[in-house]
Image (tube, rainbow, N blue to C red):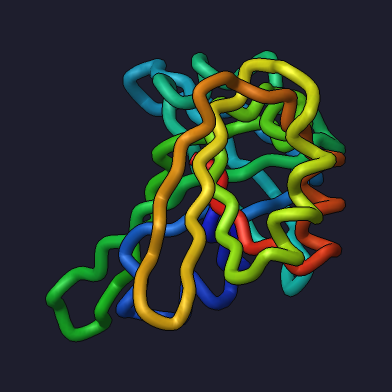
Length: 175
């Protein structure tokens, strides 16, 4: 949910979705050259619903060559254009590739915790003790208003803490 990920089949078949993130694991990569000598690669990927292929061209290939290893998992940002001809041809472009491992190991810069009662305040309090590098916003909503707060000092929030808070039914948004 944090990265607004669709599965590939849903992205491909829904003509209303023009840009999306997908998550997939690289099964195979085949590098080739165009007639002009530019590099490109065919990526064979799998997600939870299907196996599919995407083409990446020289600039994207060069930027990501070191992480494009078989077995690695990625979040891939895709753009879709549909031609106006009779066949309604779909063209899928890879805009960005990010290693799933590096995303989960990267620090969380800012988070908003959405709470609606005093019990939730007590729940989050114990997870906000340690100082760190994450800016923490709290959005408290009652029947009539929403109160937004930003903690003066940054806190230590990691992926483990996020999972704990989610399991305790705290809504949150990672910026």
